Image (cartoon, rainbow, N blue to C red; front, side, top):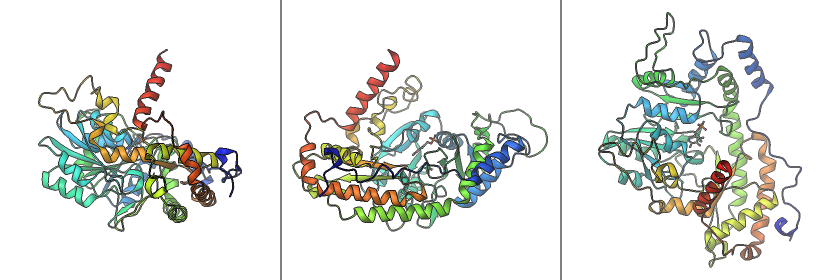
Length: 452
Ligand SMILES: *Cc1c(COP(=O)(O)O)cnc(C)c1O
């Protein structure tokens, strides 16, 4: 049995196996960008610009909605989707406790109070039961995140929303192309958002976002919110008059052209990625105490992020705490050449902007009649548990040519699992801190370094 690389043995993933850059850039992508340069129409507001409107048409067709509005990034897409809903300041928006921070600051950007719901520990998505419990007379919307690329329990969540007369906004930034009961994500909520950030499954060469809806009035409001509150005429003179509070969140034509080129091969890449990831997960399935991503039969996974949990009992170290054991497994895998990492150290409610109610200088919480919901991390036990006992694989598996690399990753996991007893000695550590305690400490050090 090969010695662990952590203890001086040979790496299971040879250094010659490199991660392929994502997004992959082909001569077609370069040609698409050059086409825009030659045409000289660079924003969605230039007359005769074709790339942005074509991307909107193509993405609406792919997702299966009547409308799509392209914007400057995924956070803007979510904020403008919420702005389109026209909620009163201090309205409550339910958000999962485990997500990227953008999911929860977007409500704040429109003066809404985020109310967090704990996750389902199998899917890592917001639990419908927790959503139901979080509803109050002030609730106006639910932001449903399809975390890691797995669709959330949309029928249950839509049923709750319908019962209470509130909107559902899908944050599908991680889930392009994923399907739930035969429907594409981004077509299931009231008005929904995607990101085209370079890290996502459908990327641009920079920043971008997309909003999808079937609703004509919401579509019009999203268009106005993107463009200073104006509604630009297809032809004729521009009035420069704003019809509502607007932002400037227009996308660039170069980004739109690049994404259109990526979109042309998206389905094929997506299928290959699915095959590669399933092969990896198939090889990891027999490893005791490693919990691989679950995919309920009624949905598909976009495999944006792969999250793995460690169960000390099944692992054969019942006396160990999950947190320190996970740390030891991560160190061993990294030494073998698998770039595993945590994804989110802290439940969203624990972020200072909520916990200390920073927002707009204490608003929206200070608004008359507004409520301050619980932002105590202990109130989200499933989220805490998952953050503590899991790690993720990101980016390395996105390129369709990642198959051979993932084979070596499977070798590395298998090797580490053969050395489970050795890991026991490395999982101790009297100085163990939970990830959220570490997050606070890292953030304090960042602040001290930046401010002198
Ligand atoms: C990336 C991401 C966003 C934000 O998208 P940007 O384009 O980076 O602004 C929002 N929500 C989730 C879940 C994300 O992963």
